[in-house]
Length: 188
Image 1 (cartoon, rainbow, N blue to C red):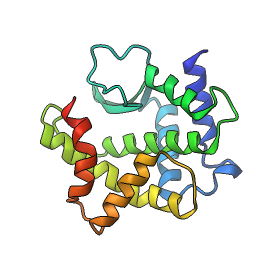
Image 2 (image 1 turned 45 degrees about the vertical axis):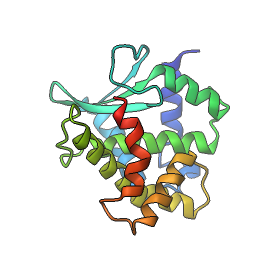
Image 3 (image 1 turned 90 degrees about the vertical axis):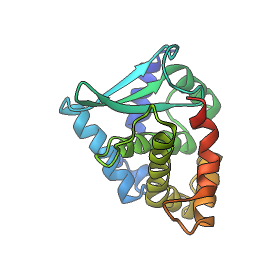
């Protein structure tokens, strides 16, 4: 199976202009459109990394992002993407709803990391954790919460994070969400 083809097919399936994606919250539509526009303009790269050895990607990481040589980049971890496809039940279209939602949410999460507000030094655990809390909270409040309200299927970890944020009254400093994210961040 060609993973690059699968990435492109899955990305095409989350196009907000498709009738089946009209339920996407406005924030999600804007972010997916931003990726498309920036990619076409050559201002954003999306790279499928076939080998994640010698990277700081955790085995559960589907995606990562950063600025490389002044240009925003989203990296999709090939081994994890293959697992994601297999776990989702489809390696080619038509992709199930949850698979499309989870892929869109991952990309949207990475666009939040690419915002100017991200000044975190990835080498410093507390800064990295603060940035993850910011990104998870922003995606949750702008997308996950609305998808839950619509009973859209998604990764249980997103629901767990939403429950944690709710328990903190959606505050930016949320110990319950920090406890969910901390174990993964300490392994990087």
